[in-house]
Image (tube, rainbow, N blue to C red):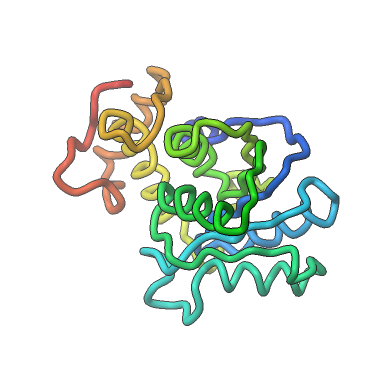
Length: 218
């Protein structure tokens, strides 16, 4: 658990929230992300809300509507005007979330110069690194529901699934810069050691198939 907590902390980029032209909410199986985004919108942090996400690995077998449509319904129920929400329903990974949202905004003749990215807590860093690669121009801040590691598991995601997913995301942070998917992110030695410990302990369910299980420290 100490190793898992270390990786959880690494995945947070700890941005200071700033007002922006647009808020991009990346879809997932965690509806708390939509609730957090709705609260931020109602506080006035951004004038436009984009929900992005089709059906991914964690939702395609359990949800009938796309992640973006489901998140929109949650935001509207929380009080966000439907007219302020744009929906992108085709993306199936983080890079597509960014690229397809950019195309959607261009079709609407919108050119935001700054974004608030709303994501799950343990995907802040990967979201930051992906956005910077796919769309390097705008200023971005990243935020997530303020949930501590111990309180994050629920009836949707177990502790073991959480740890395995965090391990998989860290592997991608180390591998994806060389593939052109993300910008480089330094992985401190102690974080890499925690990652190796968890891989050797069997948390390999969400590793990228065919890639090194323990890449060299980036």
